[in-house]
Image 1 (cartoon, rainbow, N blue to C red):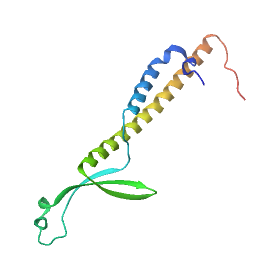
Image 2 (image 1 turned 60 degrees about the horizontal axis):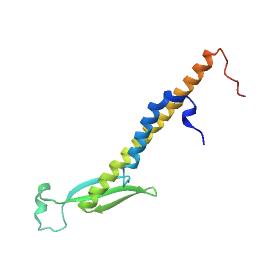
Image 3 (image 1 turned 90 degrees about the horizontal axis):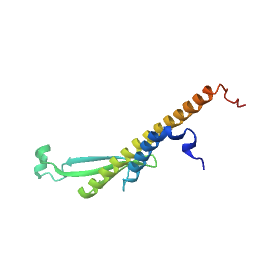
Image 4 (image 1 turned 90 degrees about the vertical axis):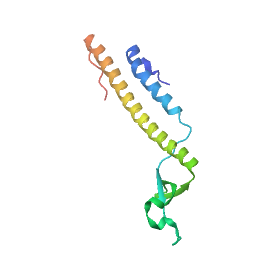
Length: 133
């Protein structure tokens, strides 16, 4: 296992603290799922029902969770309680994906900062970096 601090020493602690904050974000989500949640008001099939008068009389709300599974779109009807859970799970997934992107960016910055520090210390000693072939 490589000690991540050994590359550039204490100068990189801000990077580590930002990465630690991102890791805490990832652990805070009990449910995650992909897809979209739609709230729909719909007319019924009864010709004598008042919903035939217009949109303001439609039945609902009905909650549909749409997601891809095996390349196909799946729509699932949810109860209002399930819709709240799925809505939160979709937001959690977006938060997690954003945190992973930030984590990757911080890792790249950390590597670049370590390289700059390492290359700078080599130049100060009037040494040339070793050639790799």
